[in-house]
Amino acid sequence: MEFSLIAAETASRARVTFLTPTELKRGPQPEFDILFAHIRDRISTLRALYQGGPLDIDFKAIAERASQIKMTRCEIQHVAAERTSRATGQTHSLGGFRGVAEYEGDLGEFLPYLEIARWTGVGRQTVWGKGEIACETF
Image 1 (cartoon, rainbow, N blue to C red):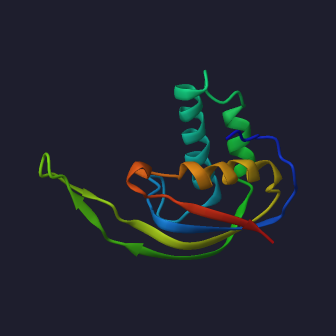
Image 2 (cartoon, rainbow, N blue to C red):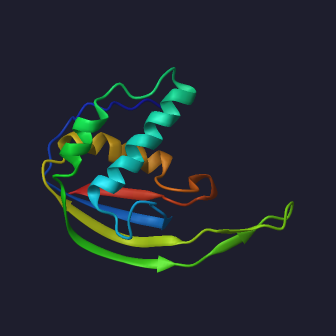
Image 3 (cartoon, rainbow, N blue to C red):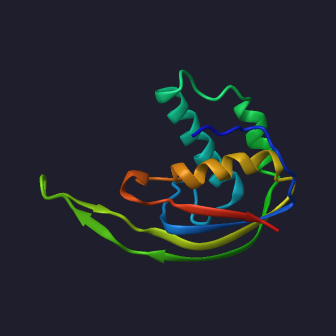
């Protein structure tokens, strides 16, 4: 499957649903610039590992534009969960937050990233099922 990072549509409002517990290190709420930074970095890392190089974008400039997107609604609940490794006996947190956040601003260029994040997940421990999202514009 191949995705384009070129915006195919414009939107001024979007709703992101956090379907599984999500953990973003840089804040207690999923402010858009924090969410986008995690998505951008994950995509760039995956490209570097599997597609011959990281994202070829101006990280500072796109981060500045992402900071202009405002969260207009946030209804999240924190979830506590953990797993214990049979091999090592170590316990790992699988907690995070679930719920809905809505954003407003010039979202067009960010929509492809949000679509890719549906497939890659966002935040910590996505390999254990954390960070699954869905996104819709309205």
